[in-house]
Image: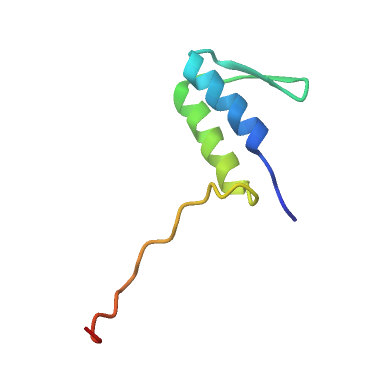
Length: 68
């Protein structure tokens, strides 16, 4: 199932940039106690999102250079 959290992420990033701690999304008001809590929520939403490509690329485990 595709999950699109882009609207919520954009609202939270705007709140973080403005320095406020309260956000209204879909008529629901949420107040964050600290900047760390706000950042954790943004990361959680990015990890759950499957549509917009917020997930990080995997690290390279090994590179085969034997052919060079």
